[in-house]
Length: 140
Picture (cartoon, rainbow, N blue to C red):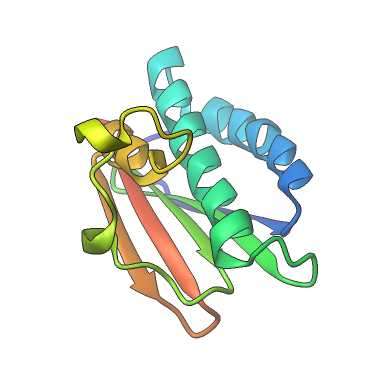
């Protein structure tokens, strides 16, 4: 795609952990459209999957009546990935450091750390329907 092109695509998932399998196929299509390389695709896949998992498990407490919305938008050489759930959100500053010694062997608690490591920008917001994580990947 060229710099001046723009697109936006949405995937809506039920809050069932088995729905996460739909994320990879959806992102493969986005990757083809944007001509992402293997490294970019893998970063996108891990970060988006973590965000969707967090939305299903923590945001919506696996409530199948609640939805998680994954939106990919391309604008000005940037891929903007938004994952919105119907939960109350988190305070990222209050999360334990996954690299501190007491947390190294924990089986969870690394999702946001991974998102921040893999994407160029990660932010959190409250929305009219719940909470969202907004991740940006520069594609220049």
